[in-house]
Image (cartoon, rainbow, N blue to C red; front, side):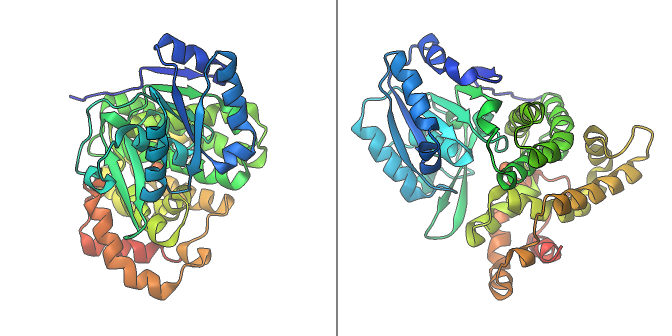
Length: 384
Ligand SMILES: [Fe+2]
């Protein structure tokens, strides 16, 4: 048995952004708040969206105060901005940070975000959320999760529930054509990790599996192409669909140990989400694989790094090799090479391991670690 949750409408394709007014009209919405960041504003995309809406008779206010790894303070500022207007929906425009911020701004009301973190489930409908991703990575446009950082405790709080699932997503790969190589690599690896973790998760189910496997098929060959040639339209289109399907996969299955361990690295050392996932992926896969060899072997075959005739053991060996290789090809540094202070790393490991466990994600891993094992995996990833 599985319970599947999806946006009400997903519009996909080059140029589909132009359909935003039609999506709003179709659903009786006319007073959107746009939530975005300074980069999207300075790129001219925000003005483009506001013009598009203005032509349809909609004057959309915009909150541009989203910060990378959104904090409680930045989201509270967005909530105050929302309250000053009269809005019937919230549009998240940008990468994972604006979309995650839009979700919490639409849902929070007068409550404390700390009271909404997992294991709390927030299912009651709030303002409808429209997601317009400009990176192919987080899959946030189709997930029932948002992650907000508590800057006082350096904790990335995972918040879950149907309230955070966007009602509408517009996935226009043309918005990703100018994305720099580093961001393409980091967000692309994040989406690959979503697909693999959803597939090996204890919550896996046939619906999520189909999304996860197709995401792997799309992301693996196209990620290097888009990094080498940012204007490669076919690769960008594949990555946008792969990121969406990876998001649908983990939203209807789960992420697992890589994400559980990745959030504390991001929170304490300000490493981008995709990069901290990439740092952990080979080591965690190697440790986890014996508990679900056939599932990991399926991943290797979907990615095309092993062929159908190979044994599971051999396919998984190739998968681990390939994960090391893609990190080298995409210049993913180890935590040591990233410049993290070793003494601080060692000092924080027990807390990071505790925070990883508390998020619940490691409990969905095919091999479930204890605190000491998580510390051991952080140590193993240090210079890898
Ligand atoms: Fe992620």
